[in-house]
Image 1 (spheres, rainbow, N blue to C red):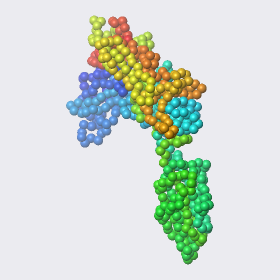
Image 2 (image 1 turned 90 degrees about the vertical axis):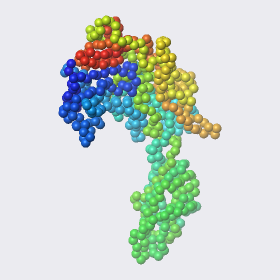
Image 3 (image 1 turned 60 degrees about the vertical axis):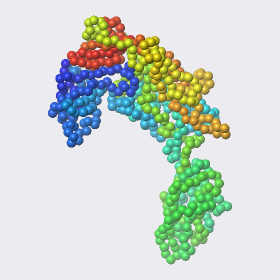
Image 4 (image 1 turned 90 degrees about the horizontal axis):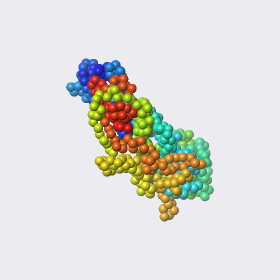
Length: 605
C-alpha cells in the first residue's frame, strides 16, 4: 500500500506510516458536526522538499503566510485518488511537520455551518426588501392573515400589519452570499411554505431618510415693501410643506402641516442684498413663531460705492427643534428690518432648508424595512430547526447542503454493497457489538421555546422501549415558540400572535414576543397557520424511519478489507449487506488502516 499526498499540486515527502483516514456519515450527526470527514493529524518529515512547500515557515523571521491560510490537497492510494478537494492546514512544526487534512465540505459551507453567521447578516437591501404596511391583510403573499391581537381594519392595518420572511427567500439569500444551495425532499412540500413573521416594529435608518423634506429657496427674492419676510419657499409635491401667507403678521412662514411630530431643521441660506447708502444694513432675522432665535447671521460686504452696498448673508443653522403643528406660533420665519431702501435680494442656487423628523415609531403608511426587523437568529439554528422538525439527516456536496429523509436509506437496499467477501472475520461474530446509541433516552423530549403569550401545548416525545437507558432527556428545543390559532383549527383559521393590545385608554400598545415559524398557504386569501407544526404532529408524520433507527439499536464494528477503488467510490448512505449475519446495515464510520484493512462501524437496519 503506497500513499501519496499533494499540497497545492505539489507532492510532499511521506513517512513510512502512511495516512489513516476517517470517513464518517452524518446519519445521526448534529448539523454543527457535519462540516467534514477528517484525517488524524498527519506528521510529515522535515525534508528540504517539504520545507520548500511550506515556504520556510519554520523560521521565526519567515514572512510566509502558509500557516495562516487553507491549502488544497488530495490523497492517492496505490495510484488511485481516494480524497480530492481536501483542505490542508499547518498545525505546528517540531520534530515533524504536523498538518490536518479535511474534506467533504467546502470552506464556504464551513463558514455557514460552523461560524456564527446570523440571519440578519444575509444580503437584505432596503431598495427591495420592504413592504408598504397599507396592504390589506391576506391580499399579498408577503402580508398573509395573522391575528396580531387587535382588530385589523381600515383604520389600523397601516400601522399594525406585519410581513413574513419565507424560508425560500432565506435559502436564496444563503445561496447569494455563500454559494451554497439548500436542497430538501420534494415529498416534504411544506418546507417551501414555511415563513418567519417579522413581529418587531423597529424603525430603519431609511425610515428617517424617507421622512426628510428639503425645500429650496427661490432664486429671485426682490422685495421693496416694509415688514415683509423675504424668504419664499417652493412647494415640492403634495406631501411637502405648505407655504402660507399670514396677513395678520405680514410675513411668510414655513408651515408643515403634514408632520405632527418633533423634528430637526437644518438650514443653509446664502442671501445677497443691494441697499442704498446711507440708510445702513438691512439684516434678515430668523424667527421661531414670534420669538427671534438669537442666531448669529454672518455678513460680508462684497462691494460698495458711494450710493450702493452689496451684502452677502451666510445663514447656517443645524439641529433647530421644531414642533410642527397647524398654527402660526410654531412656524419658522425670516423677517427683514424695515427698509424702504432695499433695492434687490436674491439667493444662491445652494440655499436650502431640510426638515428631518424624529421617527421613533412606524406610523400609518410608513415603509416596513426588513433590514431593521430581521430576528436575531443564527443561520445554523434555522437549518437545525428544519432538520429536526421533519426528522431529516444532512449530506453535503460541493456547493450543496442537502436534506434527506431516513427512509431513503431503507429504499437503497436494492443497491446495497455486498461486503460479505470483504469481511475479514471467519467466526460470524462481530468484533464488538453495542446496543444503544449515544444521547438516546427512554423519553426523548422535543420542545418549542417558551413564550408567555402562547396558551397551547405543542411539545412532543419519542419513547424508546429500553429500560437500561436514562429515563428522560431534552432531545431538542426549537429557537421558535409555538403559535396558537385564531378560531378553531380549520382550513380557514389562521395564526394568533398577540403583539398588540388595547390599554385602558383604548390606545394600541406593542408587546415583544419570541420568534415564530408558520406555514403559509393560499385559500382564496393568503393566511398563515401553525396547524401540523406541533411536535406531536411532526413526530407522527415524519419520524417513523428515524424511530426504527434508534429502537433496539445494534451497532457492530468489523474489520473489512476495502481497496482504494472501494474508498474512491464509497457512498456512505448506501446500506451494506453481510451474508454472514443475513441483514443490512447503515454505515456510520470507516477508519482506514494498513494493508487496506478498515475498522467499520455499522448500524443494523
